[in-house]
Image (cartoon, rainbow, N blue to C red; front, side, top):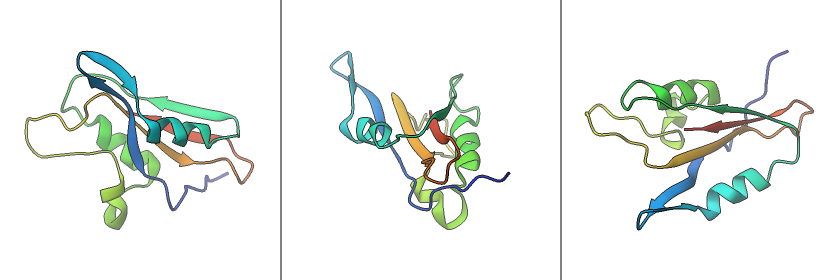
Length: 103
C-alpha cells in the first residue's frame, strides 16, 4: 500500500538550545500535538554533513518545488540543523499511521 504524504507538511523547530539549555519550541510541539493517529517515527542522528536532512526530505517527499519546505541542506561545511527539527509528513487521516520525522 502506498502512503499519502501531506501536501502541507513543513519542517519546524522542535527543540533548540537557548542560553546553554534545551527548550521545546511551540511550533514543533503543536505539530506533534496535531497528530491523533498512531505514529511511525523516524529519527536520524549522526555526524554533521552526512546527508541526514537530505534523506529525511526524500522520505517526506519534500523535493523539487517543495524543497524549500524541507529540512535545511547546504553545500558548505557549515551544519544546517541546530537542535532537533520535526516534520509531520503524513498525518494518518487516511487510516495509515502518521509519519513523524526528526532531524
